[in-house]
Length: 135
Image (tube, rainbow, N blue to C red; front, side, top):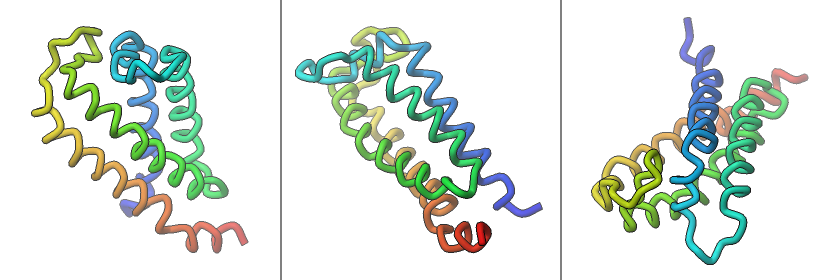
C-alpha cells in the first residue's frame, strides 16, 4: 500500500489531536497568549474549532490544498505563542508556570517544522495532482 493512501488521515488525526488540547487544557493555553491580546479563552476555542474543521477538510481532495495551506499558516502563526510560553515556563497541561522553559524549544521548533513540511509535501505540493483528479 502506498504512503499516499495514509497521508491525509495522518495529517487529519494530527490536527484533531492538537485541537483536543484546546478544549482539555484551555486554562494553560490561555497562559500562552500575551496579555495584550483580548478574549483569550474564546481565541483558544476558536483555533481549536478551526483545527478540527481543517483536519477534516484534509480528507477531501477538492479542498485539501486550501486546508493544508491554512494549517501551515496556523502553525506558523502559533509558533510565537509557543516561544512566548516557553520563555515564561508555561506548563499548559497543568495551567502553571513550572514548565520546562526554553529547553522545550529544542524539541518544539524542529517538530513544528516537520509538521509544516509534512503538510506541505502531502497537501500543498500535490495541488496539480489533486486538480487533475477533479477533472
